[in-house]
Amino acid sequence: MSATGYAMFDDKYLYFACVVKDDVQKNDELAGRIWAQDSIQLGVGNMAYPDAYTEIGFGLSSTVGAVHFTNMGADQGMPVEGMKLCIKRNPGETAYESAILLTALKGIFLYPGCDIRFAFIVNDVDTFARKWIATKDPWVIGGSKAF
Image 1 (tube, rainbow, N blue to C red):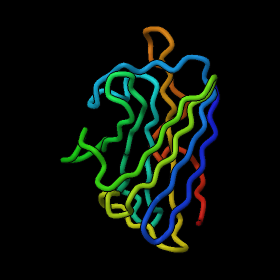
Image 2: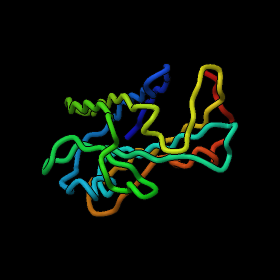
Image 3: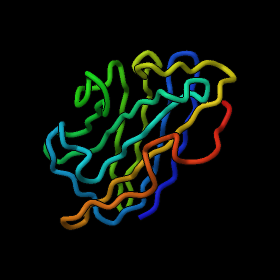
Image 4: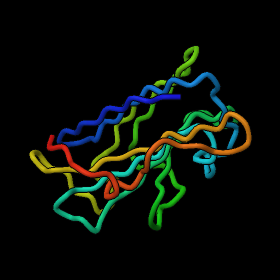
C-alpha cells in the first residue's frame, strides 16, 4: 500500500485529495466506526495556535457508502458540516477528494499566508488487524508549509 496526498485552501474551503494504491479495499463498518478499516484520518492546525488542531475522518464503506465525520470535541462522530466528499474505487486504488468548509474546522483559523500543520493517516485492513501510515497529529511531524 502507498498513498499520495494533496492539500490547499482558499477563503472558503480546505481541499484534500489522496490516491491510495491498495490491492484490497475493505471497509464494511457503520458510520461511527469507519476509521476501523480502510479509511483516512487527517489532522489540521495553524502554527499561530499551537494548542489547537482538529481531526476529520472519511472512508468508503460497503455498508453505508462514503462517510465523513469529526474526530474530536462535542461533535465527535458526527458528519462534518458542509463537507463535500467524493470517493472512487478503481482497480488497485482508491481516490479521495474533499472540500471542507473552513468554518467546520472547529477552533482552527486558516487565512492567506498563514503557516499550517497538516498530517494524515491512511488506515489499511486487509485481514483482521488495522495498519496505518504516519500520524494524524499535525504537531508530531516536523515542518510546515505556507499556502
